[in-house]
Image 1 (cartoon, helix red, strand yellow):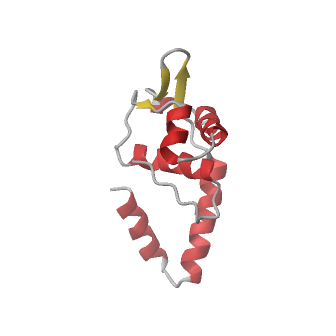
Image 2 (spheres, rainbow, N blue to C red):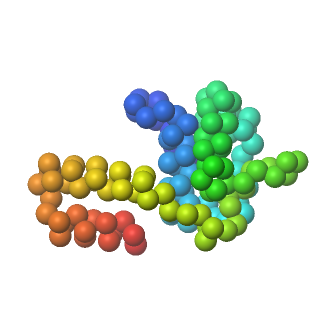
Length: 119
C-alpha cells in the first residue's frame, strides 16, 4: 500500500506523509481507518522507528491523524476541521507554475491538468 523510494532525495518521513495524503485523496484511506502502529509501520517499510514517529507527529500536527492511547492511530474523522495550509499551497503553486512555464505549458494546459487531478 505505502510506497517509499530510498533513491529519492526527499526524506523518508516526508514520503510517508505525502503517501498518506495521496491515499486519503484517492479514497484508499478513509475517515477512522486504523493506521499501523509505529513499530509495525517501521517494520513494514524497513525503516527506523523514529522515521515513522516523525511522520506521525507531522500528520498529527496537521490533524490528518489522531492517536488514542491504548487504541491506536487513526485517520481523522473530521476533515472539515482541517484548515488549509495556504502558505504550503502557495509555495507549491509557485513551483508548479514555474515548472510549467519552463516546460512550455500554457495556462490553459496547466488548468486542464489541475482539473484532471481533481477528478
